[in-house]
Amino acid sequence: MPPAAKDDGTDPEHHIWRLGRRDLLGVLGWGGVFTGLGIGNAALVRMLYPRVLFEPPTAYKIGRPNEYAPASVSSKWIKDYRFWLVRFADRFVAVSAICTHLGCTPRYLGTEDKFKCPCHGSGFRGLNAGWEHIAQNFEGPAPRPLERYHLSLADDGQILVDKGQVFRTDKGQNEEPGAFLPYS
Ligand code: FES
Image (cartoon, rainbow, N blue to C red; front, side, top):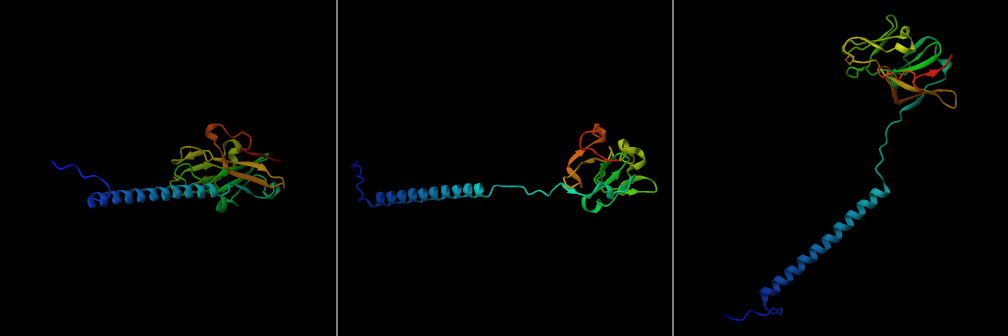
């Protein structure tokens, strides 16, 4: 049996393999460096530009209380903000115009004093139901009353409505702070 060839770099076959292995390690090495740099850069970019969700504002100033007639349902903000501002003898209530059935926009029918949804016919009680029961569902498929939005008075005396805070009649939240704005 011939003695095993000594790997001294002079055997062309071994030499080629050794170079190939070296090259491979070199490629892997640089690949690793670049991959590492790539991850580092991505982390750096994320640190410099953190992911921030820019959500639209939920609070709006809607004028002074005396701009709204006593005992009235104002549809002034339906188009822009989708709620009615209702003025009772001693308070304001902001009623959501999102039907609790499937989310259509009801209309306030003054002659019938009710909020009526055009999609599947749900009806909700109007001004004469009083602040406790306004927006109560009474006909059609809507499963619960329309919601109410948070009201407060801003520093400049304007009414501030915040649609980010919701109150539900069916959960007994009508008298919680912010569920109405006292005014007389
Ligand atoms: Fe209003 Fe169906 S969405 S009744």
